Length: 53
Image 1 (cartoon, rainbow, N blue to C red):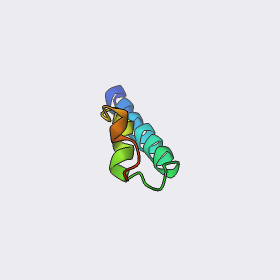
Image 2 (image 1 turned 90 degrees about the vertical axis):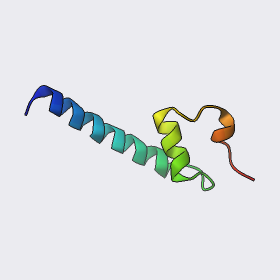
Image 3 (image 1 turned 135 degrees about the horizontal axis):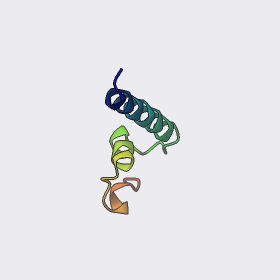
Image 4 (image 1 turned 60 degrees about the vertical axis):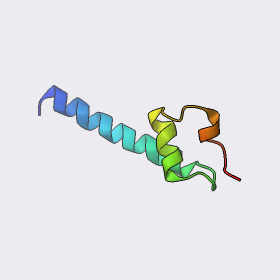
């Protein structure tokens, strides 16, 4: 296995584990999309990650 492929696979595995940890610790009113936004860093403002009323 080439080093680039090994690094890519490792990145995907670690990213998946990180997503699962964040998803398991999320608040009930947060959606899976909210977790993905926080994980990828594109949530923008805190308004996008606060509970909806």
